[in-house]
Amino acid sequence: MTASIMSDNRKSLKKLFTENRIFGNVVYPVAGIGVVLLIWHLAALFIGVEMVLPSPGRAFEEFFTLLTEEEFWVSIGNTLLRTLVAFALAFAVAALTSSLSVFVSPVGRALSPIITILRSVPTMSIILIAIIAFKPTESPVLVTFLISFPLLHAAFFHALSEVDPYCVNMSKVFKVPVAKRIFGLYIPAILPDVFSATGSNISLALKVMIASEVLAQTFESVGVAMQIERIYLNTAGLMGWTIAAIILSFVLEFIVKILSKLVLRWK
Amino acid sequence: MKLKSIYKSYGDISIFEDFSIEFEEGKTVAVMGASGVGKSTLLNIITGLTDFSGTVDTKGEISVVFSEPALLKNLTVEENLRYAVAHAYPDKKQLAAGIEAVLNSVELWDRRKAYPGELSTGMAQRVQLARGFLFPSDYLIMDEAFRGLDTALKIRLRNYFLKLNAEKPKTVIMFTHELDDALFLADRLVLLESRPVEIALDRRIALNKERRTYSSPEINRIREAYMRRAVK
Image (cartoon, rainbow over all chains, first blue to last red; front, side, top):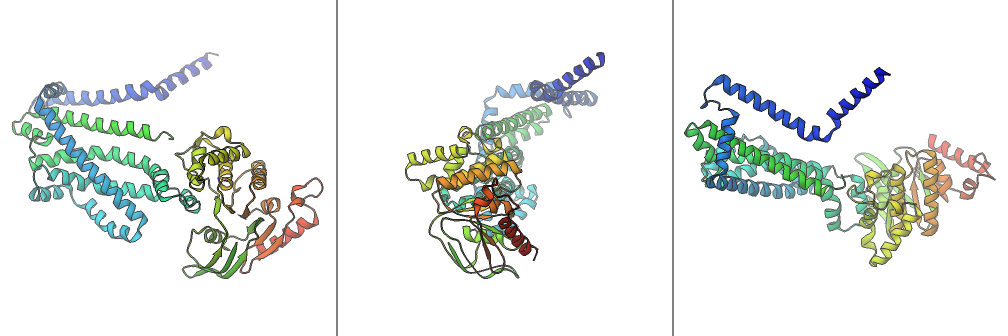
């Protein structure tokens, strides 16, 4: 009897820790972040030089100070806008090229080596070449586009290739109009993969954008703001901007996740 | 439906050479044959899903029941039917009435708002049957439509098929590996070989099991003929 009660208690505890939504969505993620902050804090204490590694408290202090400055919001807005423009362009071109690659075989074969080259070229090479050829406001957009495009193309190509062949054949035999096939069959079938690729690549696009802005010296941007903090050896300020970039990345991924849940109701 | 002088090969492997066959209008014909003899290729030729040389004369539209569900996961049962057939119904009221009638026939009207992921395999095949009969086609092609189903479910599906075919008669060409499906549902059996061999069936024998069982001489003769040719 006692053993049975103990076993039941163990089971309910196990259920609380593994299946409870509050534990899964709040407690565990907060605990994970807490561990990282603790390690950071201990490392800062150990080094003891704020210029090398400021404490999390100092970094967040800088971050909250930034929030009150107009320049911060202008820089965030500019970087976000450029990232979204570059990503939207990459998205649109990848949608076109992947569709052509799947449905027009010769185009697919011609594009294949170009995509492979784009995926293989070192990011830094693309940045340096773009900086020489384009304006500081344009080159980060081009670089982010060139980095995002092959990744999105590959994801869309894979998704389009995996559309249920039975549904494709059914649509052909029943002579379903082409527009209806595109909007009724293909787009919904690839949407899960499209959202997944968008979620993972939009953060990468933001990172690439900031790196490009640093090297291109793009006026009023997150990258240049970080560079200025580095020049003045204000590591806490640099960390403050980094926190802002991380939060921006989280927000973008969160928006994609919410959109995905709204659109993919059948899942 | 007449297929005349069909030639089809995959690389060096020839599947059909000067192959001809005719399917009688209004009848249900079962097409059987050993694996690799060209059943799937013939189905793809009839449905226009593969290139070939030769001619296929048909008098009307074709609908298909696939061996796999072939349902769009993002659409409900009712939306799946609309997706496949709406363009063939200029009158939307007629379409709505048709959907209700056909889903009632396969006892799925209550599940019309369900997504394919919420259906059992048998239910998904019933939706396919409903779709095949709802589409205003003259021909219904069935590709191993009852494959992998347990006996009880298969019998239920056969009955749904017979009911729908009585309500909306079509020329049915069913590709199957199951002799029992052919015996229960078809008017003729075609054994697919270099020259197709035809055997006339009397469905009443199979359906009226109380009076004439499987061990009746007629069924045994067909079974032996099929086995003999299949072994060859």
